[in-house]
Each structure stands twice: as structure tokens, then as C-alpha cells.
Amino acid sequence: MKHVGIIGAGISGLTTAKTFLEKGYRVTVLEKTADLGGVWEKSRSYLGVATQTTRDEYAFSDFPMPAAYPLWPSGEQVQAYLRSYAVSKHIWPHIWFNTRVDRLLFDQSKWEAHITDLRQQTTHQLSFDFVVICTGTFHQPHVPAFAGIDSFVAAGGQLLHSSEVKSDRLLHNKAVTVVGFAKSATDIATLSAGLASSTTLLYRTAQWKVPRYFGNKINMRFLLFSRLSEAFFNAPRKSFAQRLLHSVGRPLVWAQWRGLEALLKWQFKLKACGMLPTHRIEDQISCSLGVAPEGFYELVHQQKIKAHQSEIARIDGKQLVLANGQTIHTDVLVCGTGFTQELPFLDEKYRHLIVGDDKRYHLFRNIVHPLVPQLGFVGFNSSLFTTLTSEVAASWLLRYMEQSLHLPDAAAMQEDMAFMDAWRTQSRPIAAEFGGTCIAPFNYMHLDQLMTDMGLPVKTGRGLKAYLKPINPADYHQLLRGSRQQPAMLKKVKPAYQYY
Image (cartoon, rainbow, N blue to C red; front, side, top):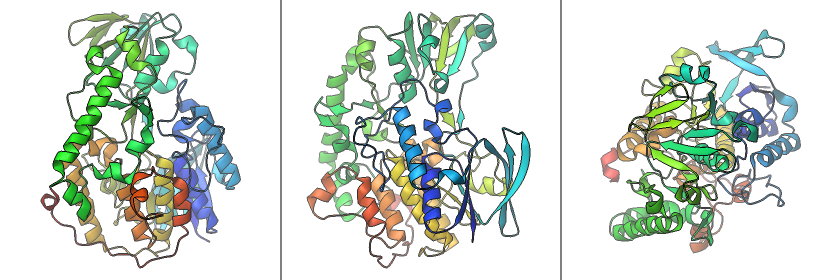
């Protein structure tokens, strides 16, 4: 029986464990924290956090979220859902909590994991036939190194990462400044506006955000999570219909995006808020696409959130000196500045192949590197519904380990990786964020590739309905168990310029 090691017990680690356990493999999941859930684990979640994706899309294919949940479940509800999944799928007994992986070395056809039991402070060594890294894109909280931060702390100021905002008491009657414009920053600024004596938001660039309901009527999933909506993006590889749409149909594509921008400008009153982005919305939509917190733009318009498009030049006591010369008195400084993505434990020889000097991940299908033996990644194909993309990736990786996929040779796989890396950096720079591990907005394209590699059908139903309906994870429960087709060999990768 092969022993499979899985690093991380978040969404990706749990679905990977389930996939390998169902096929009878011995599985050990190594989790550094005291609980499962990854980014949803309590120590990493901030007060009031909720999903950006709706309940029915943010679920595993064979385990729907409870119907009693709201459409946008809270962090606590997601955590409870993941616990139920781990119990129902018999994953829990296989998880080693409070276990840190210090080193992962390949030696004579085995991966040797040097681990530390954080409760007992003892070290151990485990041997695995195959390892899956599921640490994802949210590895370590990132806090910028502000000049003068020591004087801020010495004056009684409190510096927090957004994941450390656990209680109302941290913000109540305080002068709060939040740095950033992504989900956590705007969430906390909105929360703070009802608790703090003053709330300031500092950001470099105004970004497009989308509402839960476009025009206060149409659920976002109908405009963002369908095959038709994906077709309007300039994909790296296009079907005949997509090539037609982006050539003779280019005016239609332009009108669709400009119309969406006009709707957002009207709905959020972006000009009045002074938060009108200067870039095109289609160039931004990716895994960092933010759903606007309810009331956020209204609070900015009412000056209950004082927004400044500037950066902190230095800190002098409790005074933040901005690059534009303004100063802001602050008691609590919250950094909604995201996370870093690291593999500190992986053997340097292989880590350098996977993560180059450019800090981008080089993986075929965002899952494996052809020159790294018996190792895979799940959750490094993050999307707007990572539960599903991780689940399908885990099924793909199981077949990869069992050598039942029909894939090209290592040279062709590396050529495909080079093509995708060039496309991310040259044709769609936003695709290089998160180290190039985000596959959004090309969620269907990615899923179709994985399903085709496995020789499985790519969609249920036919006709226009299949292109208009939002993603439904339950469809993939059926597809992953569908009749096998002859897997298509990867075609010779063409130069990038032939796609544009």
C-alpha cells in the first residue's frame, strides 16, 4: 500500500485526502495549526469574514453546503462545513494537527519528511511514496516594513495584520487606519466605520469591485460564473467560437465590458467616491477580484471612511506621514496586505525548479513539474470556486500517480509551461499574481483541460443552457464518475503570438 503524505488541511488538503482514501491508499495529512480549514481556520480568519462566492458554488461536488446557510456563508459556517466534510469522508483520523514540516527531502524513491510536533516540541521523520503540497496561496501573513514602526509601537500604537482582527474591542473608539484595497482591507474598513472613532483607508490604486447583485437585481454568479461570461476574456488558447468573438465580434466584447463598467460606476457612485479605476475591468478580473462589502462605497461617500490614495512614507509616533505630505493620527494600523506564498521546507534542488528566481510557480496544469518525482500540488490552481478546482485537480493527480493519464513527454510539458508563463507575464500581467497560480477567470478552460486529460466528459447538457448556467459543482460529481473517453494527447504548443 502506497503511503501518501499531504501537507495542509485546508480545502485542498481535505479533498485530496478524500480522493486518495477512497482508492484505498494510506494517507497522512500534516497540519501546522490546531484545526483544519486553512484560510478559514479561526487563527487565520478576521472578524466578520464571509465568502465571496455564493454558497452553492463554494462547495464540493458530492457534499453541498447546508441549505440553511445564507447565500454568502460566514467564515464560521465554512469552517463548520469543512469539519462536517472531514468527518463524513472519514478524513479526520488521518490528520496530524500541530505538526510542522521542517524539511522535505527526496531519497531513493521516497520523500522523507522531517516534522516537529508543536505540542510536545519533539521531532520525527516520516517516509512517503508520494507527497501532495496543499499549502495554497495564503501561506504567511504579509506586513510591510514601515519606516518608523518602532516609534508607533513605543507610543502605544497597535500594528495588526487583517487576520489578527478577532474582536470589536480592537477597533472600538480607536482611530483606525487600514492599508490595502483587497477583500480583507475593505471588509475591515467597513466594520471599523461602525465601531471606531475614525476610520481611514489607504490604498495605492483603486480597483474594480463587483456587487453581490448587479443593478441590485442580478446575482453575480449569472454574470461571472458561466461559460458564456468566460468566453468574453482573451484566453491563451481559443476555440473557433472564441476566435470569432475576439476578431469580428470584438465590438461586442468591447461593448459588454464598457457596459459593465458603466453599471458599476452608477451602482457604486465611483466618481463621487473618488474611487474610479483607471484600468479596464477585464484586465483586472482574477482571483483577487473583490466583492464590495455591503455599504462600503456609501460609507466612503459619507466620509465615514476617509479614503486616501497614497502610501505611508514614514511613521512618527502615532502620526502616519503619507507620501502626499498629509499626516494621519492612528491608534490601530491594520494591514490588509495579503499573504506570501512559500515552500520553505522543500528540498532546494526541487524548489528552484518549481519556484524560479522570478517567484513564479512553474507547474504543468498548475499541479506537477515533470522533472520532480512523486510530488504534486493541489490548491495551486486557485479560482473563484477553489473547492471545485481543487477537487478536480486531486482526481487528476491520483490518476497521474497511478500513471493512467495520457500526457505528453516531459519536454512537451515544459514547453506548455513556458508558453503559459510567457502568456501570463506578457499578454495578461494580472495572471502572474499569486505566483501565477490563479487560473481565474479561465475556470472552465482549466477544468476542461483536466477532465480531457482524464478522458472524461467536460460538461453536462448541451445547447445554450450549458453556456448560460452558472457553475454547479454537483455536475462534476456526475462527470468525474462518467464514462471514459480516449484522452486527447496535448497538441504541439504554438508560439504565443499565434494566439493574438
